[in-house]
Length: 240
Image (cartoon, rainbow, N blue to C red; front, side):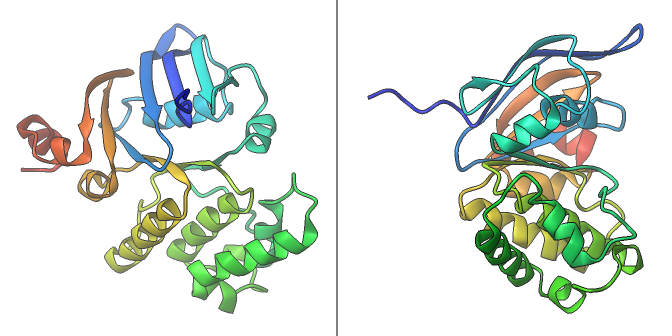
């Protein structure tokens, strides 16, 4: 029996900004059911990696495969249709639209109206505060509520793989706990996660597997537990 392909397979990914090579041959995998964390210092190329994978920026070389299909040259909306969603750094929600309207935009490629309504109800169940705010303009939400909305909107496309860029950035500790609890629940519901997160300790606690990115290259990988106990990682990224 042939094994299923990884949800995501990235091989020798290279991205250039003019003469600067921002990614220099990144290789990583996300298997079905996994949470994979990508950690590294500011400027290491973490956000660039996610943006290249989700086809928001051009790739100079290498391949991105989603569920065994080469999607390297597809447009971003085409990879969404194939099962990938991206909750970007800065949240990227529509500030002048309501919570409900933002959620519905997350399902813009779908036409199964009844199922869309059901998925919106699931999103409200994950984040009850959004249910209370459903007719509120998104720009008036707190930072934590906006982050919850960004995650909920990404889930509206029913992704097999969810990319998350700095979901805890600038949030109060109790909000971070809520976000990570929901991410664990989403993963246990069958969605694979690729997580870029400045809170390396939280990310590695959640992750089944993790990679360390330095100056556009993967320099270390292992299970989340292995990297949590690595002296190099503890010194460089955990402040120990």
